[in-house]
Image (cartoon, helix red, strand yellow):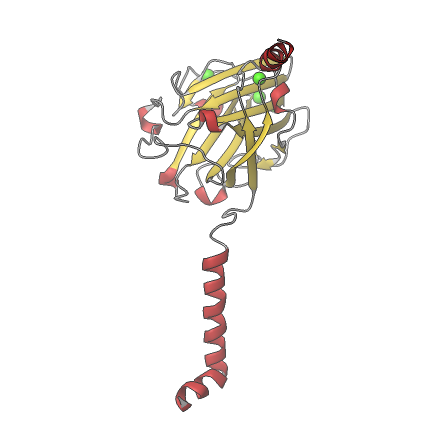
Length: 263
Ligand SMILES: [Ca+2]
Ligand SMILES: [Ca+2]
Ligand SMILES: [Ca+2]
Ligand SMILES: [Ca+2]
């Protein structure tokens, strides 16, 4: 006992005890909160229409694509590249993740065929760490070409519903990705990851979404929501699914309810 008291009152003992208390605090308190530097809290949109009209997204948080990733000497001018994105989900459609991305880009580069060097054609990438492995091997990549057609990496007709509306230099992507459906390029399919994905309120996965802005034959910027390498799992943000419902199907459902009330 005396020995223990001596240990307690010694500097070394005190440091050890404080260290243990701090560690216990971190383990018990911090595992439930954000694991990564940035967090996006995705709310629900029921009956999403993938039509390029973003009415149902009005209340969703907008994040800027203003962080350089693998490529770029500095931030581009607004006219060269501007981007922003939103994320949502629905408990009624829980194997899919919804995205709205708006891009302004002055020159469209599309010089490679579908699924070939997609990072050197203008494209938006959605990358996930479904099981929070925080290592490269955990990551899965979807790449959607700014030509409105190319589906690359893990993206396939089966697992991606999307439209791209181009109006001059302005692009609107509306996208629903279903990681449980068959994947595209086998080399990027990473079939062990996310194939049983089902979102639920309170769940967190890793996300990076960003644009490859290409022109003059090369990729000039890779720029998105979180800084750091696209394949660096530690440079992702937390995507957390929240139960709040932002929007229901606008016109149709409302009209039906009103019709039912009137009868
Ligand atoms: Ca829509
Ligand atoms: Ca550009
Ligand atoms: Ca292409
Ligand atoms: Ca471009």
